[in-house]
Length: 343
Ligand SMILES: Nc1ncnc2c1ncn2[C@@H]1O[C@H](COP(=O)(O)OP(=O)(O)OP(=O)(O)O)[C@@H](O)[C@H]1O
Image (cartoon, rainbow, N blue to C red):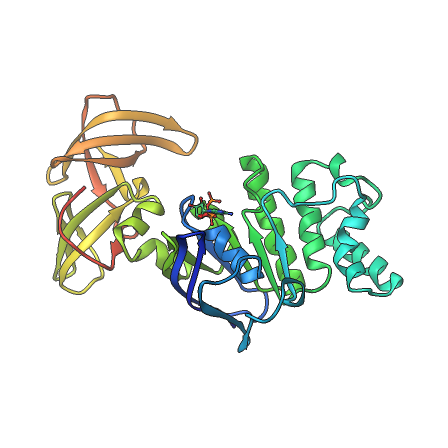
């Protein structure tokens, strides 16, 4: 178990992490994503866990051992940064072997382990190539192999995919999770992309302004974001209040059956939770103010009940037309810390 209690870290007088608490299970190949907007302190947190930033307050422990007196190289944590930080003029083999050489492992063991890892990251046969001669995706796979070579007890990945193009990112995200599973290494991966977080992680810790505000399995995070800002961060573009009575949710955006106890609720709506259809009796109506044809369907911005609402559509919609819409109760997010108003 990695436990952070009241962790505070600052640069000069400005505090970046303030009283941050988080407990992460570290058995097997569990992957935790650290998700949050740019500048919220994700990299600072990873660096603090790795021992690269001193704490101004609080404590970090691993399996009950306080890490304060344990220097970086004794923590047995593997770290991969955004740009891999390989030794560019050295071979792939030298790079992967680096951590084993500094630990003075026998030559034969190093050769075997390097071979095993290059196989695992799909770079067998690349051992004698210079790191600088590889593509960005290949370099990140070498960095992953290098971090895993000494069998770390925790792997820390700081935005390992952010320098790569989207298609490659998705492929590499899956490959990284396979490698982590094969080596059974507990991992924390930093990302600002919630889809990437869900592709890779078993649990997601959402960070905002130097604190963890929610730590949940992905399904729970999508369905029940704790605050409006978490809801917006995971893609809800409209926040609206409603009330449940007798299994029916009523709001200014219509009524839908829902499996929730009676009482006021606050909804977060992603475009996928709002489906456009023809204007028929009983269905709420909105005016299309913007229409975009995306690869996975038509996205419509509706003006209705004094607010703007993003929706998806299977039918052709013209800007300025009135259309009907319905909420999909299975895709609505229910914000657990409620207050009143629609925006
Ligand atoms: N070495 C440093 N010296 C001074 N301030 C720093 C330093 N490193 C980071 N900061 C500041 O700390 C805050 C958090 O930065 P950090 O890199 O931890 O955030 P992040 O969530 O990882 O952001 P991003 O997603 O953009 O990488 C920012 O305001 C940043 O400017």
